[in-house]
Image (cartoon, rainbow, N blue to C red; front, side, top):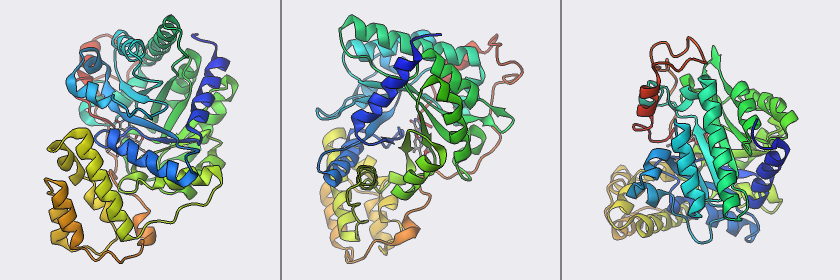
Length: 403
Ligand SMILES: Cc1cc2nc3c(=O)[nH]c(=O)nc-3n(C[C@H](O)[C@H](O)[C@H](O)COP(=O)(O)O)c2cc1C
């Protein structure tokens, strides 16, 4: 057993309190860059008069790329001066490399919170035993969490700085016959994770079907004796779902991913709902295009004049979902090269359209149904046997990009 778990549970609650509302922007590769986090935070601030923001996690970075100081990785962990706490999501498969990455983040004062990703369902990663396949090998899972927590504590202490909480994000397991979340949740709590966030799907489900909120309630119960908060994740599309998830599961907070794609104002509505102030109405198309344009300008500021517009293109369909906008304008927006292009195309849209309602409030982003999970041969035979798998697992870190 690692650190005093009561203390660790308290650290998780303190971290949530620091956000002001129990809302976490789910790490999403290719989405939750500095520009998107700022945009979402601005909405939360505006809705609550600056009182509450929530917690906004970076895109996932790999521990190895960080330790090697990959240029793109260093850009991905950069935060705004007013970003607090600075939450970085780390993915790693090797305890020593994860420890080195945690050390770097804290030694160089680059993060206030480190979230460990054990949920990636992508075949090229699980095929090597990484991502959501990894918690099945329970000794390795425990060793990674332990290395991260211990290193975080030692490094912060060496600098005389406040502890940097380490949290864990996971899925229910590999498939219905190979669930890992209860055992992995207990292990994470025992090793000192400050919270455990559960996406209520197995890897086999990818993003299909409905998230199983009962599993979240079950984990809340399981971790109760440890005092470690559980955060619920999966299918929070509106503030109503967020409140319902907390009520139904007893989770200490919600982690919101796809619901905010093309809807960054959702964070304003969530923050308002949890602070008890008036919930901002959904925007009409004029306001949506203003947010879109602002998003494009932030991306250009953060990623530069070439990558910024390119990155912006993927958001168009989400922003315009449910509105009547001609096909050639949508297509044009999905090919913009400059902010002027964005302005010219928006000028051609009939902006007097109200929010389309429920058609725009359901599933969006990844929605693939599941399939059989690709795993290394013999992976499931023995959860304690890593013989012959370690080379594969290391390879799993080279081919990952979120999950
Ligand atoms: C485009 C995309 C990228 C994602 N990247 C990551 C990631 O880097 N790390 C991670 O832990 N989860 C990642 N996820 C999973 C989400 O964080 C979240 O667990 C999942 O989408 C379920 O929550 P939701 O129903 O609110 O979307 C990603 C999801 C999507 C749609």
